[in-house]
Image 1 (cartoon, rainbow, N blue to C red):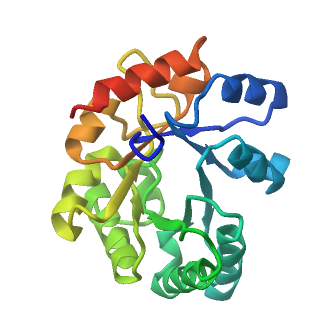
Image 2 (tube, rainbow, N blue to C red; image 1 turned 90 degrees about the horizontal axis):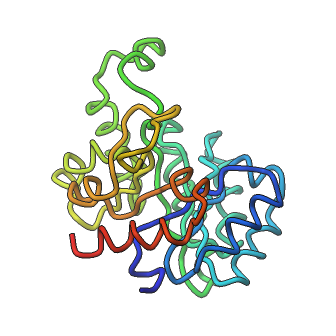
Image 3 (cartoon, rainbow, N blue to C red; image 1 turned 180 degrees about the vertical axis):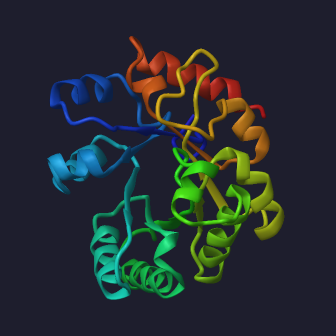
Length: 238
């Protein structure tokens, strides 16, 4: 199996360098991709991306840019130039911001070996109806996710980050080529922790998820590669 065939993106959501090296040393780049989020990026900076790329890993840079269009345009251009495989912005930034992000990645792609995938974050998987109500949003989770995904689609993004629970709805509306990247993936024996809208890897793939973001289930396992191999084998035929 190559990383191009695996649906698994391993989330490296910690800042301890020893622990980080222990986990990465046990993972094979042909079996997964890696996600660098705000904690890891803030602690180690862009150079860590190059380090992992030199080891053969494709990188999903998960910084969820959300600012005025000009700032996001500049940030996306610089992020694309890091040679990452995938990057994201927050759909709540609005259509103009999403279009600015799309323009920046397209511009950077002229001098890159491959164009990074650009996706928009809809609603965090830690959020549910109660969190929406506190923000004054009266729409349901499905309605909110669909509205934000529509903005991403109209701006020409490659897809969205959403929970696996919304994938079928989005695929029906936007087609199978509109990528759905789904965090909140848990093995049956796992604790949900701070996630609300969760699903197992097998269920998520059956719903149509293109990529599964999996963190603790793999990174906190005694044998991360063994768990990763089991997950890949369990979903490859679905």
